[in-house]
Length: 261
Image (tube, rainbow, N blue to C red; front, top):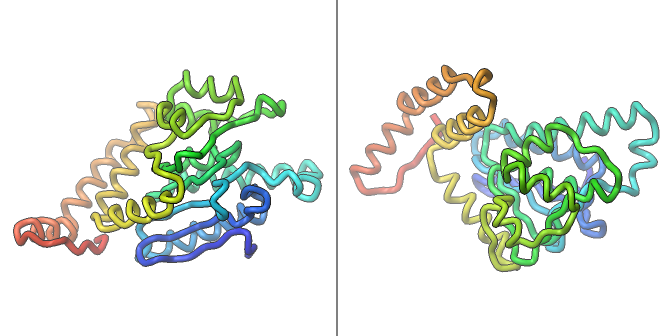
């Protein structure tokens, strides 16, 4: 396990920190593998209800791939295939993860960092944050999955602007596009995200998880949507102990204690 990814638990919150501040948290293959392992750890821990992804140092969330590692990590066709499969797997895992994931964005969010943020459920950034996808300035192709996720988030017109221009966009630009949910003062992003994660984790996990799954179904082509699975998730909520607890807490005017069952 690399020390350039820090995985920790804070009560009901799981934290994954990209810890490569000298390179604006650019990500290498071993870092992606560590993130993958961290996500597996939190998936198996019922006490963890919300995940926060962040970058160390306060100057960048993630600034894309660590180019200095290309010679060792992408020197052969087989190495390139392995790298691409690993990153695609982690992006997909985050996008489809059963628990809510918050992107805590301070500073630069570039290239793969933007792709990573797009995979999260909620994105919060500081006022000084900047976003870009510079593929067109590097001559890089950009795969279907990443474009599809960005289009689903900001729409086709803004997605084209982001890719065609390869410009840097401000936090306010990002909010206008729908690329981020919230813009908060610099220096307050971590506190805001921690409080947000705390509020989410106090709610019924089955309800939160079912909504995440059903939202995912709405984004699929109509012919691929599993409406029976959606109905089963709703029934699971109504049949749960948490639904009983929620009703009782409401009647007794107290805070509910949800157990996720």
